[in-house]
Length: 293
Image (cartoon, rainbow, N blue to C red; front, side, top):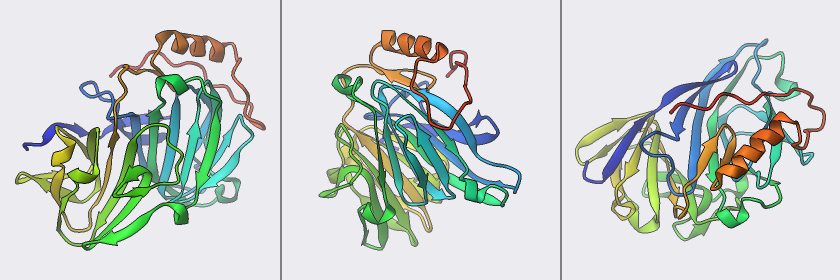
C-alpha cells in the first residue's frame, strides 16, 4: 500500500427517512482538494407510499454537485429554479453568500414504486468567492465528456483532466472522474492528476500493491502522481481531488466557510428566517446540534 495514505470506510448517516453512506468529512481527513463532503445515496427502493423529501435548507460558501445513477429528484431553490435531475446529468448549485433549496421525489413519480441511487458532493469555494451571488447550472448527460480507452469507460463529471474539460462551471482547479470496467485492467493515471487525490470504489474492487480493496471504501493517495492500480471486473470507481486551499474550511450543518464568524451569522440568519425563501415551500428545518465526527 505504498501510495495509500488513508482508507475510509463508508459510514451510515440518516437524513430523515433516508439512509446515506457518509464518506467525507472524516475525522482524520476533512477535505480532499476543495472537496469537503460526499454522500452516497442508496441504492434505495421506495414503495408507492414512500418518497424522497428533503425540506428547504440553507447553504453558504460552497457548490453542491448532484449526480444520479438511478431515479429522479426535483430540485427547487430560492432563485426560483425548478429542475428534475435524471441519471447521468449534473445539478451544480453554488450557494455563495446564501441559498435555500429542497430536494423531493417529482410529482409524476409519487404514488409509484421507484429507486434512488447517486452521489451528493460539496465543493468549497475559494475564500474570495465565498460571498459571491448564488447561481444554478444544469448539465445534461450528453454534455458530460465521456470516452472509451483501453477497454475502460471514462466520464469527466467535473473539472479538467486528460486534456478535457467538463461543462460544470467550477471555481477552482479540480476533477471528478468516473471509470467503469468490464474486465480487469491496469490503470496508470498519475500524470493526469494534480493536487490531492482520492478514489472511491462504488462497485467491484481494485488492487494496489497486491492488496485488494472492495466497494464502499475511499482510498486517499499519498502522492497523486503515483496513482496507479488494477481495476477489477465490472467495477465502478470515482477519482476526485484537486488543489487544496491555503485556509482551513469550517463546517457546521450545511454551512462551509473559511471564517467561523460567517458560519455564526448564517446560523443566526437561518434561525431568524432571514434567508431567501423557496417559492411554493413552507416547511422550516431548525438548526441541528453541533455534529460529532
